[in-house]
Image (cartoon, rainbow over all chains, first blue to last red; front, side, top):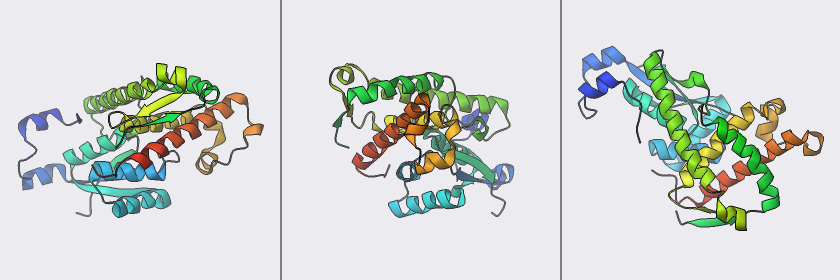
Length: 105
Length: 152
């Protein structure tokens, strides 16, 4: 699956390369947040979480219920580029996924 | 997943298909999710993001609409397998999101979520759009129940 990435960084930094302190300082850490919508079925959201993140059933259900009851759930946090890739994949599944800076880390 | 077929009642589903086709036409030119979900102020990245989402969505919709070919028209049968199942459930989601945004906007999210709509009191076009909304949810549930498991 082709993912959107920042072209310049993708060309100069293989994804396998260790994360440097410089990179962390430049990009910071980001949260992938899924927002509630009144359309997508609970069973569908659970399936998407399992497919995209490899969550087990219980973890996927916990995040789905958090989205449903609290309106949002943080499903992943880490470097910006990978967070973008996850948000993009979630949007391909038509979930409303947004990125937020993870200021707590 | 094991391939499976579903036989639909043609006189019920064909009128719904016209509504679905209308939404699918619209989804050829705009992603189903809201435009402000693109997480970047960089206009080049935003455009690339939107464009790739749209390409992916179009590919899914092509597989979805292929369900309603000759076998469906002649016998009312649609067939699912590992090659189309995920694309179909994503497409159902896309069309349902678009139905909510456009023809079903007047019903309100509470009614959509609860399904508590008095069909005999709403206009014909709204009734048909809501029946599509339910039909697509049923297709999704059916496929999800047949998928081996949710793991990647």
